[in-house]
Length: 377
Image 1 (cartoon, rainbow, N blue to C red):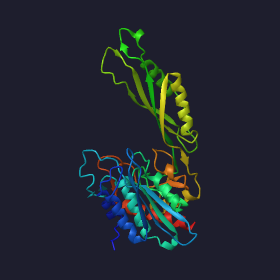
Image 2: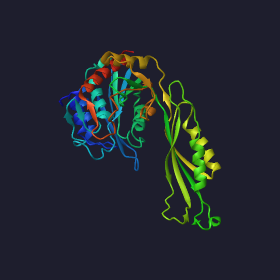
Image 3: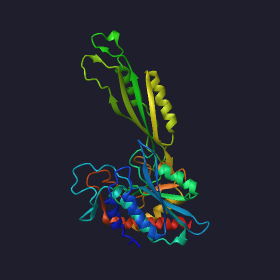
Image 4: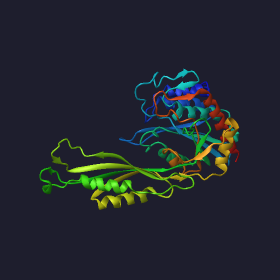
């Protein structure tokens, strides 16, 4: 039988498996080797096609007594590219002082290690426990959690509650939990013109004045002033491209891209319609991709349960927040109430990403408390 590793040892083992998005192979082998001895049935499946696939995912479940509650942990094993300038190898986990360094230490292999440690101490008769582990959260997120949800529906194994292990803590472990997220969309806008010599503007149609006017109108939009649980929605101009190397040529077209993070006063479709209407008035065409809708798990029994577990282990009352970017919780919320809680996010996606080693064991204890209380109902 494979030896079940400590939280720290498993975090190190997972970090040592390079898994730049999309994750595949060895890192899932490592996780499966720890879950199988705990009585989990491990299902691994590759989904999707190029350019955003294929993607490997893992769903592990240990069923409890008939009619019991089902609690799920969720996360991802893929990581962002490490980049250059690391003090030690990004996939060579290194303990330095009180910290464990390596890509994925906080986002989010450390949290997955804590989930496994928590699961190892929860008896099977307590209820059904599962881990929903995606391979593409840091990428397009088209064939990861989305495919896992489809697989779970086919298996008839939907959870009653789900905790996502994203690194939500800010200043110290336990100070923030996420009860929702803003929605996200990007829009590519194209303004066509007619190229020509700058000395003969009447023989050309310069798209840039229309582009500038359109962007000024979009930038001036006040989408809302926020809600009780969400900050104000914001629209940001993220790219302008003309591609004109000549100084004496009026360009034939100009393109731009905007990104909108929005709260629950809007839907992605309503915002796309608003932007498209403005674009059309300036002679532009719009192409949009909605990455996720805004969602909220209203404060209630689940959030109280998580807060109580955090308080018991850290002494902190976590702030219920909807700040930050998107996560795969935007998909999982279609199944059941979802809350996110995890390690400090101070070094995620940075060089020399690191987790306080002591926090790994504290997080495992918090996760155990949450799962046991959730299963007890």
